[in-house]
Length: 133
Image 1 (cartoon, rainbow, N blue to C red):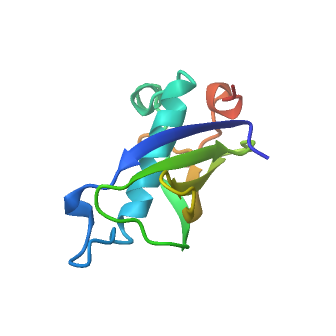
Image 2: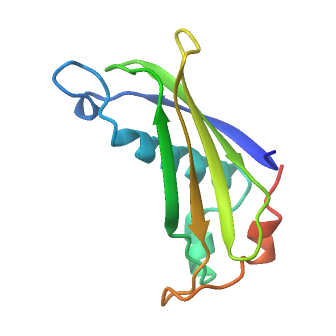
């Protein structure tokens, strides 16, 4: 169950599609990142602020399940959820839907480890552990 969730609308750009006009699979992870960044921003916690506070959140695990194609110029919505954080890890979940018909295009998740500036693990600060609506 997510403590916080949000939505972000994205339009597939020409540079993101292959010769068949279908979005290349590599862009889904970038769209996940957009959803994650916007969710944090909506909660008042930007990546820049987190990093200025000496906490970095490298991705240590990423999954993506591709369910349907999305094509050039189609609009889609990235639904991003945040699961309860523990220790030094935080997990986001994603669902991308085509706006025109509500078809789920992809689902996935990313797990991030909290580190210091030198890449050493550290506990998540309370501001991230308690991130919620």
